[in-house]
Structures are given as C-alpha cells and as structure tokens.
Image (cartoon, rainbow, N blue to C red; front, side):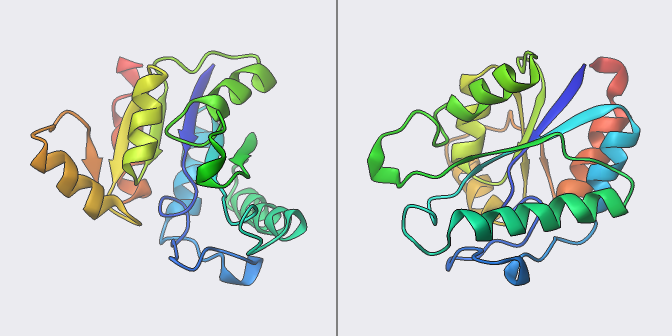
Length: 184
C-alpha cells in the first residue's frame, strides 16, 4: 500500500497567522487539489496530519474544523480523488502532548487506524516541525516553498542541510513523486 502524508496549512491551502477558522477562510493553493487527485489516480492513499492548536486557543470549534475538512474532502472528490483520513492535534503547544508535530503521535494514529506502516513513505510539509516528524518516524520528508516553506528552506540552508528535496508547491512535489514511482 502506497501512502503519502500531507500537512494541511501551507501545503494544501494558504496558511494564515490568524489561523484558518472557517470553511470560508479555506483557500486551496493553486493546483494542490488536483495534485492530490493525481496521487490517488496513481494508487496512493492520501492522509493529512495537521496541528490545529486554534481549537485549544478557542479560535474555532470542532464543528468549524469539521466543516473545513468536509470542504477539503469535497473539493478533492470533485477533482477525482479521495482523502483517506485527516488526523489533527487539537492541543495548545504548551500542553506537551504526544500528537503535536514534531512529535509522532499523529503518525502513530494513522498507522493504527489504517493498519499500515508509514516508514519509508513520503511526508510533504512546509515547516521544520513537519520535517522533524517525518524524520523521527523514518518517513521521506519533502519540503514545499508555500506557507512557511521559504523560511524553513532558509533554516536548512543555514544549517547546511541540503538533504531534503524541496519543490515550489505540492503540485511540483507530486510530479517528482510520480516521476520516481519506480524507486518506491
């Protein structure tokens, strides 16, 4: 089973320092929805792993988050794909939970719910937390320059870590992944 893990804000949709609080604020990055559909057509199961501390901060509630995720799933289905699961951490960063990236609790939840192993799968993110979670769980990290990606790329360059493949956006990352499927 081929699985890919995607971060949400900054990878699939435009991020906001004010948080994405409603379905009206959920704006997909150009071609990201079609990129997910392309992954599905190529036989990938697509899952989303996202930190959503806006819940703990009371910027939005579970119903509003469900509406956002329903919209995302509907958009992907209209494009011919499917999201096999959305896993989120609702905790505040100060809560010291095991599911907030860069910790790997969300990845453990994905494995348990989908009865799969994520080691060796691709994990596409825009932040250092995404990359650290991927590496800690033996996934293959991919960085996109959307969202916080340019800042993250700069941090990698400053630390002389050029090992993480980096692409302009999810669509370009997917083109790379699909072009190298023989290596999976």
